[in-house]
Length: 238
Image (cartoon, rainbow, N blue to C red):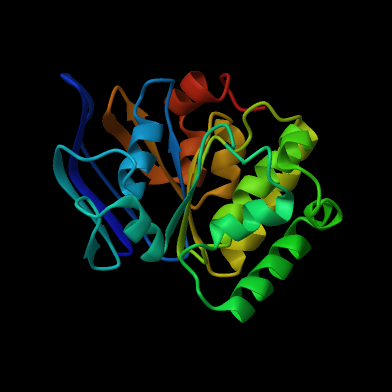
């Protein structure tokens, strides 16, 4: 098992956000995590990344227990997260933002090669490499946030709401690139409000409700599931 979460509990103060969730991700998969606001989707990603500490349970990535590791070591182990809201460094250029993503990598040739790959994936970033990130459009900032995560040469990429606030045409472009990234061999875990787009991209999915996994199935079956359609897809699939 590439990533396995077992009986994961997370608390914020006295409030338990995750009530013993179980999920797994196979190498090479795109797995989508669906649920309403407050279901625990972002908390799940942040606990994998080490940004939120588990109060119980285990998170094992390729044989390594992540739940007790500091966040920077988790990045070095091959896990990178694209946070909700993009969080690029607005006063730094595109190039400088990308360089910051490579802080775990000391191989300069490798860094250069990865940066060129990112510019191929997102040609608009190549055109704007000297531009301050804060002056980019929302879609360009999302591309930069994904690019910055890829600079760490992760083996698994965690994405939190990549379509948030973006026009449909940009969402389509970004999801197409995520498919390319996955086809290059990278495993992806996707938290996404746009459930239909997420399930069309994913191999499998999980549905969270109030900190619990209530459904797990293939993406195809979840798209066809009447309960999922009514709750997350605006009813009867269009």
